[in-house]
Length: 176
Figure (cartoon, rainbow, N blue to C red):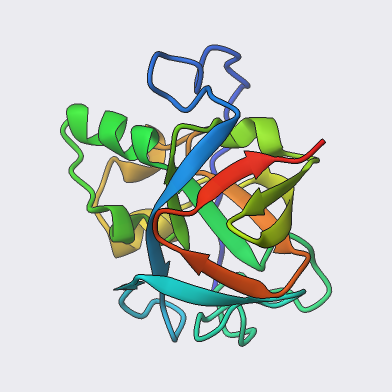
């Protein structure tokens, strides 16, 4: 399968609008898993995080995701800001939170601030690797306009550094 990505100039204002997640502590609003690449996302109240692998039952934990890379970093866990999805909806591109195809939808924390840093989700320690920019694959699985609407707001790719359970309502905070 061919992968396509959007290259866009960095916009330092993007992601710092009011309500875009600017606090140091946020909250997990939704957990979503897909057993297969391109499979439907299923919402759960809790998920077991496995060090170096991801969330039990998710395609990336099993190495079966569309973009899985057994030697790569940042494939264990994906996160997106609820505020970014709300902004997308305000522009007329309604996307249910699980349709964003990220494992965690969080509120109240700027995910860009976690790039290159350790952070904790509930009791699980993670490391923010890089932005999870939207791609044509996401747009193909959802609807036209999603890709452009989520440029620099598509979320965060992270490594899972410790085992544990992540639950809806857990806090998410930067460490150190």
